[in-house]
Length: 436
Image (cartoon, rainbow, N blue to C red; front, side, top):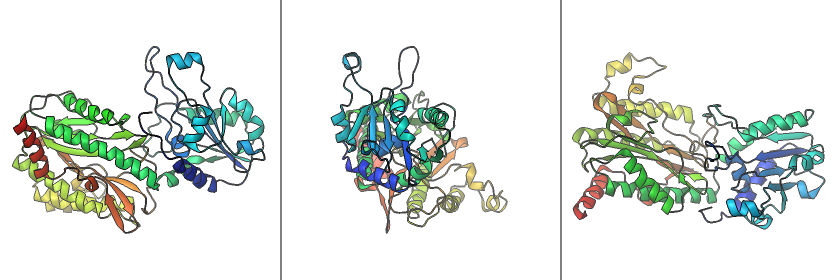
């Protein structure tokens, strides 16, 4: 791993929270993600299953976590099954966890090699009445590809058809939404790396480069500061491309006068940052670009004030829409008559601001969380309003990362003075020009 060892107290804490929610006489079984084939004999870069990482911190393929607090055999109350290395693996792939290293990373004392682990677990599972299994229960999961926990759920249910089965995801959605201080600090580190990338592209962007040149500057900064890479496919969208919400081709030449929208994040120690910023290709916002940008910035600053304990996320989206209405009227994009005549199911503002304002953030960039329960201290959200004017080729989105506290919030990007005001952006870009 590129990142320093994470304090195992985080994972010990997370397992205690999970097992406290289990029914008596229950076992929980978690599998790492597959190492997916690319083409031929090549593999995609391995990315650990988020639930397993949350509970044990092991960042390696072919890992199994078992928790059975009531097991009469102490060695299986909490244990790991890992890939056993050999000389061939060491030569071709490099180092794998030793049992001692896995204990140090996770705080789990009982570590076994994973060969025939289900046969080894057969008698242990038969001592349990209930089995907790995790599936991908993220609201945004498109269910287009198989994954290991799903495949293993089918296997385990075939092997043990008479047990009672329960959803680990139902517990984890709630647990993962409340961040431990160690998790907050990991996110802070990811955000600090994001700031370095943002400042780098402010200094290097100019008319005539390509969107992928900006992407390259970002990944250079992220990797050179111990990030694993992007936390999602980055959006570098110049001009009208910024009106395509999930534009990821990043292929066009940047023209003089373009406003460029950059939405990206850093994966640091498996924790994600998520940042959206806009910059003028030539170092100066036009009057119209500045007006639209400042309208979005005002909404973002107003919206984050609502991110506090007790707020309901879905109601919050509606309130932010009302904030945006005023800005769109002032910009001449909609009229009061449009608002009076609007379809309540698709308000007038949706023509120019068609997405939600906030999502949970954490191990996943669209993290687990309880969308229909009141917000609470420890929740971590993005705040990202936008205005997209296709007829003018202007798209603006501004996104900060917000930690909810008992008495308000902390904007983790403002906390490190990440440039966001028009004047800050122009000053950095033009200072770089002056010294070029």
